[in-house]
Amino acid sequence: SQSELSLWVPRVMGSFMAVTSLFMFCIAWRRRQSGVFHRLAIGISSHFFVTGVCLLYGPLAVPKEASNATGNAGTTATCTIQGFVFYVSLLASLFYYGFGLCVYSYVGVLNNFDKTKILWIEKWIHTLVHIYPIATGIILASLGHINNTGLGYCFPLKGDPLECTEPHSDIDCVRGPSSYSQFLALQSFVVVPYILLILFPTVIMIVLYRKVKKQKQEGNRIYFIEAKDLKYQSAIYLSVIYWCVISILVVKILLFAGISSEEYIGYTVFMAFNVSLFGLFTLLSYRYFTLHGSTHKATTTAVETTTKDGGNNNIIVNNSNESTERITEGNPTNRWSFNIFDGTNASGDFADFVHEGDSEEIQEDTQEHVRASEVTPQT
Image 1 (tube, one colour):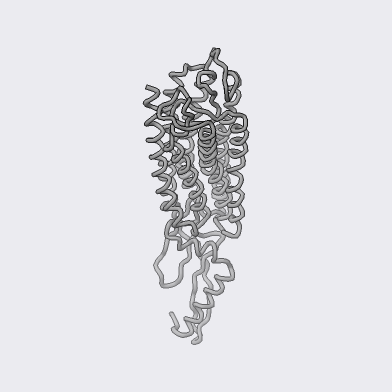
Image 2 (tube, one colour):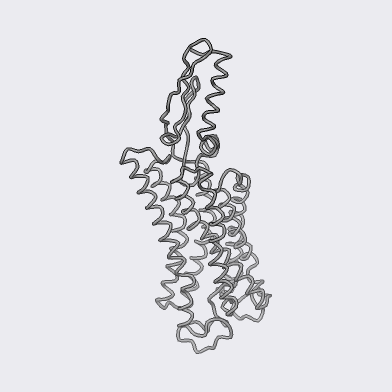
């Protein structure tokens, strides 16, 4: 029954969200100094953890006078606070993943994850992903549009009492949308950003793929990542946001189609289940991009130096515009890994070289090699 659903559905989903997001947060926190990608992961996991906590609190925030609830012990104020925080945190976590990561990937790949060229984007991502959720959340709360959903938690765009926003209802709303038509019109607060969450990252990753593929077709080595790897990794990244957002859009379409309240509750439970899986899939995606990448072999340039005894000594130095690897004479060949969100794999060795190995440091490395050769000449 609906009363039973309102008791266990939010708590089960909230527990699952909290555990997966906390696990992701702990991993990202340990790596927060390694790059922007990990700090964006902290933003995603933090908001999703808050979302889980809101669901764990569940019907305790629902006004105790509400008729469509079980275990409710709250007030209108607690309901509004829960719905506002839930709404802002859920949208912010989706915006971090859907908007923030694709923009960072675009800037990062096109600049080969050079820290001096990509760090500026981080502050803008952290700021912009919060503007829409907070602004619209304040508007909805001030208009009294955050109310009991009938599923054990409060969320925007529902009326009070719950039946007042059903089709052909003759019950007047005390709070929230005043009619069913207004209720449908207000769904744009959710539908429009969710459509953008599908279209925007898809377009960005397609444009990025075409840029990388074009430089390969022209025979230029500009970007470290291969086009085929970018395509495969983009599919993994986009599949997570597709899974979550498409289920939400399907329920909204069915709502516009005029399904009954009983059917709507069933579809909403299915949608909420998919949203709770977003935390797990995001965690798996984060782990994948932390540990996997695109492996390449370098194009190197030989620098000839002269030792004290007059012998020649070749030092092989990486060409940062054309290669992804540095090889020094006498050392075994190393291979380095890149992906769409990080300059290197988890080892981080090449990150130091890419981000710090500019022309001056390459010269310093060469000079150190020369000094070593003067002490121990090599043939």
